Image 1 (tube, rainbow, N blue to C red):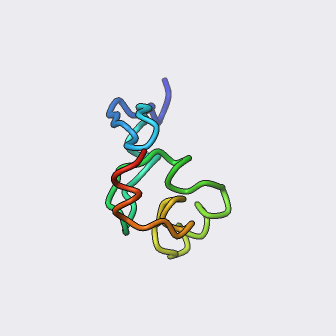
Image 2 (spheres, rainbow, N blue to C red):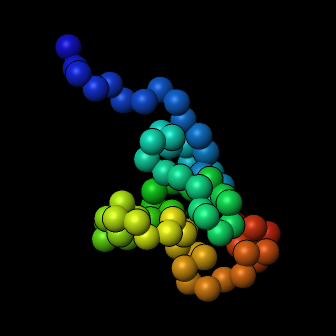
Image 3 (tube, rainbow, N blue to C red):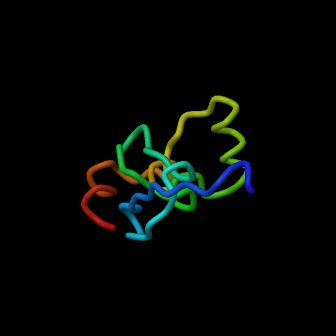
Length: 74
């Protein structure tokens, strides 16, 4: 009998439209989009930085794209 079971709650990434468990992605602090871990963190080093207190910003916001452009185009 497994101690921890996989999450049954899923949501959809606003960038790639892929469904993912809610405990693996998150919401960007800047553009307020719900994103999978690939589009939110981008790398394992960024995920560690967020765990240590860095702001949770998605890959596109960190690249410097304006928020209205990020929200308008997928």
